[in-house]
Amino acid sequence: MCKEKFYITTAIAYASQKPHFGNTYEVIMTDCIARYKRQQGYDVFFMTGTDEHGQKVENLAAQAGISPKEYVDRVSGQIKEVWDLMGASYDHFIRTTDEDHEKAVQHIFKKLYDQGDIYKGEYEGWYCTPDEAFFTDTQVTDGKCPDCGRPVQRAKEEAYFFKMSKYADRLIKHIEENPAFIEPESRRKEMLNNFLYAGLQDLCVSRTSFKWGVPVSFDDKHVIYVWVDSDILVHANKTSGR
Ligand SMILES: [Zn+2]
Image 1: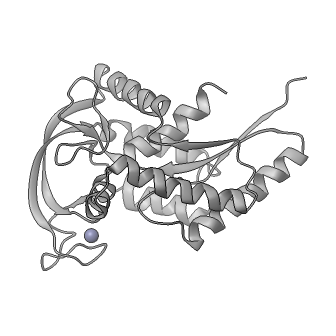
Image 2: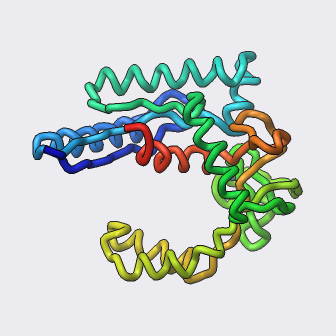
């Protein structure tokens, strides 16, 4: 008999520092749901893991005098140790430095480029190094980052962009027609009002200012932006190689 599949994942913890209570809370909640679904007879796949690329990790490793890979091996190991101590019943612990993950990310990025959803352009804005984020003029006041309050710098770089604007109408239609697609209701409204109705901007999806990331396979001056790398993995692993 073919059991119905149930997939659940935590957000994957960023391997910049030791895990904190918030990460632990999340893995326990996810574990509860996974165990409950198994008892109900579902074929459950529970994933968790660590998100390991980005400038923040590169900087922390340099400060510690070790390579970024050595740094994340250490932190990811500490995180996994805590999850195991808690008895989390995950089926797979993914690391974004895993070879199969990196290959999948490169493959998807290339496919998006080939079909015209990713194009090369130039990004300019206010850059906050600790947050690895660009901000617009309206978001920045007195030269300070709106997220962390530290100073931002004017920066420009060649970058690849994802044509997110192209998908706005389709996303709005889907979310409006399927009220359960995003829950709770407050988050659904936030997504619609603050992002989709306001108009989606194309998203900058590569970086050239540091090296610690998955290289763009056809242009290795660029690494794939860490948020794309870590968000693609959830889908890539959900749909392949079970
Ligand atoms: Zn900041």
